[in-house]
Amino acid sequence: MSGVRVLVGTAKGAFVLTSDGKRDKWSVEGPLFAGWTVYHMKGSPVDPDRIYASQSSDWFGQVIQRSSDGGKTWEQPGGESDKLDKDKAAGASNKFVYEGDVGTHKWYDGTPHPWEFKRIWHLEPSLSDVDVVYAGAEDAALFRSSDGALSWQELPGLRAQRGSEWQPGAGGLGLHTILLDPKNANRIYVAISAAGAFRSDDSGLTWKPINRGLRSRYIPDPEAEIGHCVHRLALHPSRPDVVYMQLHWNVMRTDNAGELWTNISGDLPTDFGFPIEVHPREPDTVYVVPIKSDSEHYVPEGRLRVYRSRVGGGEWQPLTNGLPQENCYVNVLRDAMATDLLDESGIYFGTTGGQVYVSPDGGDHWQAIVRDLPRVLSVEVQTLQ
Amino acid sequence: MTTHSIRVTLPYHLQTLAKTGAEILLPVDSPVTQNAVLEALETAYPMLRGTIRDHVTKARRPLLRYFVCSQDISHEASNTPLPDAVLSGAEPFIIWGAIAGG
Image 1 (tube, rainbow over the protein chains, first blue to last red):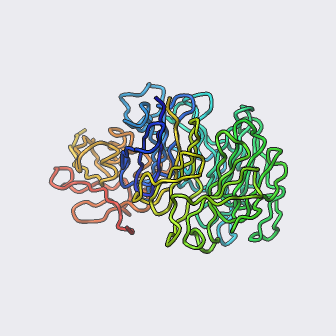
Image 2: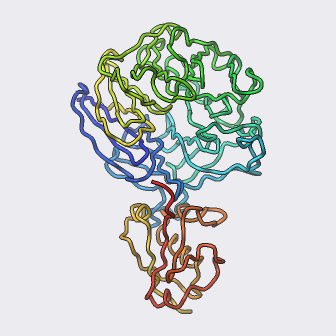
Image 3: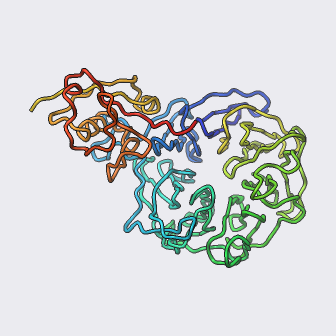
């Protein structure tokens, strides 16, 4: 019997929502890591029982949690020294140290500011090795673990891409998107607010900015090589050279792995937003959730509408069936939308108001799984066979 | 060398990480200082490394405080000997999260 497991990170803990393939009746477990902020949880594509979670707190810093039984139990890798091989450092699963001379990036006022680790925004498990996982950090950097999150090493070639000129957005200088190319094991895409999108073709050793075609009015040179506030990237595994982007303003698309982007905002009511997602079985079907503006981070007109394009952008259709269409003023954050891999594809998203919605039919009908969680920061879905 | 049993009080969030109650008892060799207590704590409970002090610099995280005998010793040198009342177990070494919002 197939089913789904939805991993929800919130401002005050994590929740695991499970259902069978019908996706109409749900069990809710949580809060896990109660009182902690959980930016992200994600399962390994190699072994769905292996799940990684980023747990953090302004008081107590970063913690990494790992489950090896599908989320029933959790441990801090290396947190209990009696379970550890002698050659492994204990208590290093939250040790994120920048490589070499740490240097500076630009602060909000344009002055140099030392790089400081604050938290992990996103965890991306490898497509082929259960013990390899990537972590996107604030201040922006990419880390990699090859021992199941016992220890981490920075991939410093990324910050070599004019990192001294990167500047935080209002939410911080965060590396929030990591896409692993399923057809080219050496290719990684990342996105950083507010530095832009970058690509590596040698497994993270060297990087190049891929921002040509973006136009951002809020930076001195709107077409600069870096400095764009990219909110999210998404791709379909069958066609990984086609990447979709929710920019600060504008929804964008590249057909050549980021060499050139074109605007596909088309007839959207507003092209500001955070998440973007691709239908798991239809590479030309894309979802966004527009919000009113950079100044008003909630859906327009008090109506929660997901927009779907079936033609790779440009032409968009509002999806409203089952979603509140009055007095709704929530946002959907960048990591809070996901899809499942069931035959009839499910689309999921969580809101800043604590609701998690599912559409078991690709967006035509929606229902709330839960309505009153803390602010939802991330949603990931595991399809279980 | 004398070993003392030091009472250490943890804030709730760290209790959940270490899977302990509010107070734990730690053997600490003399001289018993702030640094010696924290080293002993992190050795006994590796899952707490990085949550109280920075992994590399050992600097106290900004929103944490250390209290002993009704005094805030957060800004004292980390190698300052702790009071006899802590060594005897009459008073705990308290690690506390600063009140800083909801």
